[in-house]
View (spheres, rainbow, N blue to C red):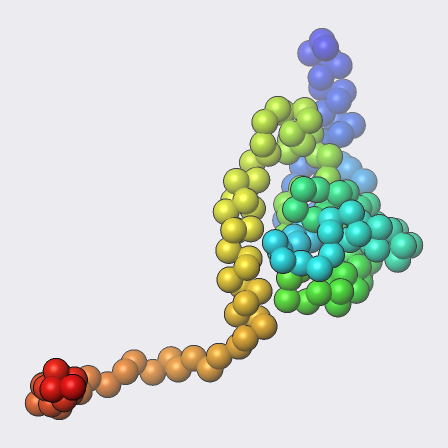
Length: 164
């Protein structure tokens, strides 16, 4: 590809982020979200993909190894997320993605290898079973520091345990 062709490609396909919006692109006003399915989720990635397509919302849906990516206007993406999470709320997680699906700066098909951030998603994925468990079994947590007991009381406890 010549340098001129490369510049044309950049003008046509590259999106320059500016805050929450993109400049010189069809992405102005749109957002991208990752729907990550936990390891014990009752829904597969393919089922989630089909479910969101059947909502018939004007959004771009891309199947991934961890779930799906959604891209579109905020009201449509948020509606899809709300309905998708209702399928299995303790095992479906949402993450902001800074680039739309297929963006040449992040697309591994163009760059080769894992995309930047994939290893972070992989590390977070390993924790999702614990997060799901915590959501299913909430416990009261006190933010007060425990009070120290006097040494004499501690010695009495130790002596009592040792005597048994």
